Amino acid sequence: MDYQDIRYNVANRILTITLHRPDRMNAWTLRMKEEMLDALARANADDDVRVIVVTGEGKAFCAGMELVRPEGNIFGYDIPQEEELNIEEVRDSGGELSLAIFNSDKPVIAAINGAAVGIGITMTLPMDFRIAAEGAKLGFVFSQRGIVPEACSSWFLPRVVGMQQALEWVLSGDIFTAEEAHAAGLIKSLHAKESVLDAAYALAEKLMRKSAATSVALARKMLWRNPNFDHPMYAHQIDSRLMYLTSERMDGRDGFKAFLEKRDPVFTGNVSTDMPATPFWPEPPLK
Image (tube, rainbow, N blue to C red; front, side):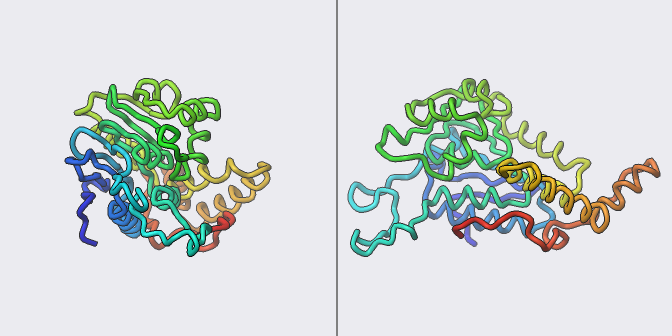
């Protein structure tokens, strides 16, 4: 795909996706959505990519959705007139991205180098870590525009910061600082603006330095999905199956052998080809 609104760069097994509309503070477009979805699919299929870092070009991370016109659909969708509309078929572009990140086989780190508002902050919620520039302005501003939060953020945000904090930010729609977000647990760490990307790369290196790619992919899925079960027995079932498969048929074989032989393990499994074929989690009701 010919990327225009993002940049795609792989170095040291880290993919950096850069939102690249600096003249518009990296405002979100439907083209950016398509390019991000393509980039994530490409990364999943590329075993040379172990970790994904998402950042913004210039002074902002992402200033929200690009509002395209005062008439018609303000978000740029080509939606038919009301009498032709099947509301069940409408999908918000931020939610499409969030689901793609949720389903990623690689850890995803947000390097929030500046303002992140609306979709600019909700797109980071399914990412595994958020590192931010000191003083960056953030905001779930939807109520102040007469709309509702999108990008599956009503599912992700309470899980990250708790319901009370999520309600305060979302219902007020107020802008808040990265320092407040850090105190509430939304942001992992704060750094000088020029150091945010380096901090993200240091974390990425830590995640992949001694780990097996397939173990990381499966553990990420377990931690995002298993807490949603009504009873720990369901998590136990998944743990049991994956413990057996990883230890008997995957990189766990050499992992334990290396421990007994007092040497570094040699992990050869590839996420693109060696993940378990059997799905262990129920399929969502919508595709």
